[in-house]
Structures are given as C-alpha cells and as structure tokens.
Amino acid sequence: MMKKTLKDLNVEGKKVLVRVDFNVPFSKENKKEITDDSRIVAALPTIKYLVENNAKVILMSHLGRPKGEANPDFSLEPVAERLAELLNGVEVKFLDSDVVVDDHVKEEVAKLEEGQVALLQNTRYRKEETKNGEEFAKELASLADLYVNDAFGTSHRAHASNVGVSAILPSALGFLVQKEVEIMGGALENPERPFVAILGGAKVSDKIGVIENLIEKVDRILIGGGMAYTFLKAQGHEIGKSLLEEDKMDLALDLVKKAEENNVELLLPIDFVVSPDFGENAKGTVVEEIPADQESLDIGPKTIDLFVSKIKDAKTVVWNGPMGVFEFPEFAKGTNAIAKALKESDATTIVGGGDSALAVEKAGYKDDITHVSTGGGASLELLEGKELPGIAAVEDK
Ligand code: AMP
Image (tube, rainbow, N blue to C red):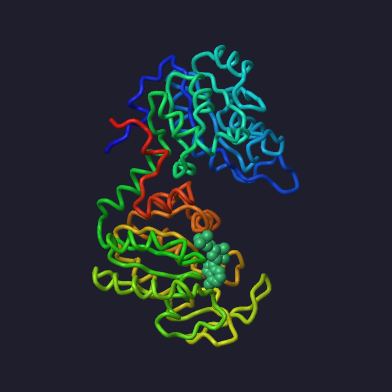
C-alpha cells in the first residue's frame, strides 16, 4: 500500500507538526556541543520544503532517555541553535516547556507566521511518549492541522509523537522517511540481480530475522563479524575463544540448509585475524585455523578477496554489521575493505544504519553509496520484512 507523502499534502498556510529524529550525540566534556549533526542535516529537505511552501512548521523530537521527566541535560535547545545555523538565518523558535505542550507553547504556536519554524522540547520529557499515551498525542495534535513523519530512526516504535498523532491528524511521510522506504523497501521487493547481502556484527541472535527474510530474496549472503563463529563452530571448525552463541548453533545449521534449499550461496570467512587478548593494543595475526587459545577479531585477507569478488558483479548490495572489531584499527581492515567494495561498486548499494553506517562515514565513502540509512533498529526491522508502526500509521494514498 502506498503511503501519502509530503507532496500529497496542501501545506500552504497550514500548521504542520513534523516528527523529526534530532537524537544527536553530544560531546562528553561539553554537554551542549553537538558532535555529529547528520541527523539534523537529514531532516533539512522536509523542513526547507515546508518553509518554502509557506507552512507554519512545528518540529518535535526525542533526545536521549530523560525517562519521562524534564531534565536540562536532555534539552533540545542546542539543537534549535544548530538547526537555525543550518537553515541559513531562518529563525527557529525554541518552545521550551517541562511538559512539552502547555498554554504558553500553544500561544506561541498560534502566533507563528507562514514560513516560520518552531521546535518543541524533548518529547521524552513526558512518560506517555513511549507508551503512546492518548492524552499526550491529543495535546501534540491540537497544535497543528497536519502531521508529517520524517523520523525514520524511531519509526519502528509506536509512540505518541508518531503513531498517536497519525491517528488524529491528516498525515504523510516526510522526504527522509519516503527515501528510506523507497530505496530499502524497493531493493527488497524488486531487486536487480545478483542481489548480495553482507551481514556482520556481534550476534547471530540479533540478525536471525534478517537472515531468514533475506534468504528468500538474495542470491548470496556473506557472513562476517562476531556472528560468523557460531556458524563455523556449528560446522565443526575450531573457533578458539571467538564469540559464540552456543544455543544458536542448531539454528545456524538450519539457516545454512535453508540457504542451500533456496539456491542461495552462503559464504563464511576462510581466514582470520586472531589475537590472544582483546583490547586497543592487541596485535593481530593472520591464520587459516584459529588456535584454541586465541580469538578471531576480523576476517583475513583471503576472505576479503573472496567477499569483494562476490560483490563485484552484484547489481544490488545490502550491508549491515561490521566484519570485525572495527573500533580498533588493527581489526578494522575487513570492515573497511567491504566499505571500499561498496564505494567502488556500480550496484545499488544500501548500508543499514548503526556501525556499518559509521564505518562508511569514517572512511569518507558516504557520497559514493546509494543510500546510508539513518536508522539502526528501524533499518534492521525493514530488512526483517516487518512493517514499521510509525510508517503503517500514516494515511494511505
Ligand atoms: P552489531 O551492533 O550487532 O552490529 O555489532 C557491532 C559490534 O560487533 C561492534 O562493536 C564490533 O566490535 C563487534 N564485532 C564484530 N566482529 C567481532 C568479532 N569478531 N569479535 C568480537 N566482536 C565483534
């Protein structure tokens, strides 16, 4: 079912309430200093469109986990300032309130003129937010004529500021959420082939749903990262002290069998970078058999060559999860090589949020990837083939 998008709404002169994801990281030393504003940047197309089309824009977001009460450490005020800078002089009225919506906020919203922008205080100052409380949803909805969901990162949650408000106001998806759904959803529904999935990260248990869904859709699955060792152990390999989820070994074998039945090539690492200890100063050694007293912390050079060769002819590539402990440069080579292979590929390349997105950004490859998702949990749920409640709640076309 196609959802309404921003351009399906007549926003001229209307008060438009927009759920954005301004959950940005702050410096540990200076709690008011934003260290990465990419989530604010990602919301700019929707905000600018609304300003240019003479809407009265009311933005809302959560920030961190203030646990349902006002807490200045989680105030969105610094975000309002950063947003104003990014909008090149468009004023952003920060409507501070310990309860997010009160009489003063209502008065200020009523005074908004066409093309003006306001930002409400952190929606998680209210405990009803994460419980999709009806009263809070009504208070938010009372501020506006229309609702737009442009917060992909929280669309896998049913909260008052997305699902609750969608039930009350005429609603549509913002440009960011539209892009996330069209590119990732489109690739999964109707991929150009060969379609290759690369999966990594710490645990098999986090990715079971993703693997099960992708086995029905892809031509190849390349598995690296901590999760690979549960597969290798289940197949009888020595994995030393590498990550293992013993209770997932049977499942790993089932997945391998399912891949065979679906004619999906499932590839595991064939060499490794191991170390006797784990840490910033650990030194890695390349091996083909993992010694019993060592832990594998990255895929080795032969695996890199194998995986890269399997990406070369792909027409669609989806990647989620690092190939090793990429936080330490000594064990980041596998992850960086995959990022580079995606950068150099002519395929539609999609990077699920979280750690792999970070790796692509750190390497400076972001502009060469078709789409780097802004949502970790939300993009995983899309890859699992689930319907995201924050998107499902928006009106159909
Ligand atoms: P996830 O959040 O599931 O995507 O997992 C990401 C985490 O997995 C990162 O913090 C990596 O350091 C970790 N990881 C990846 N490969 C390994 C490995 N071989 N051993 C231990 N941890 C790993």
